[in-house]
Length: 315
Image: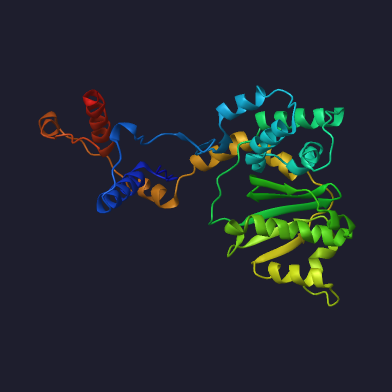
């Protein structure tokens, strides 16, 4: 499958399409024209729906979640968590919510469906079926990461300009339960840098934490071996750790604006295009002159015509 997205004028799309088709021709690769789609507003891809508005969970998967009955066995619990885990980037505090269910997967634990597990099951279904539309990232814009840690686990949110790109979380390991608060907060930062390394490495980003002492981690002289090891990893990134007091509801605010925030991008007009419009003037042609013009089919029209011809020719 070949899929690409061009967030600009259709003319640029045509240029990229010609380039892709030329590369296919050079390497003698073939694509059935009737099975190709061009100039579409959204595309289903690996259980997601990708559009100019962002990335959403595929409606078919939402139906699967809604139809999922209470799992009667450990195997069924594992299957449900597998589906839910695939979309964990859409769910804030996924590891915390799923903890009662994941405990059933441990060896030596008797299978019992308690009220706590029922609540976790229903909450995951609710979160999956009402998952937000995550924005598409832009490498030219600055990244923001919000981190938090507690005895329930580590959580972080990757954002750009107040819009959520992804959530990430994990439960604490047994030895981490003994960590002091300072180390847990730093562990959350390290977790975010590791899981989103392919986004953040080489990019300027701001890390926000509600633990004020982390602001001075780079200047502290007395660090234990664990902190020194983590600090070496943190220094690989171009980042600044900032203090964010309290648990401000930045994520909820961003999600509340998701329905219209992308439309602002769509209706922005480049400055050079505005200047070009200002210099335009009107001209008039008489009927005789205009009749001499021949309208040539566009690339899009040619493709659609060939698709129809190929579909008619198929047995």
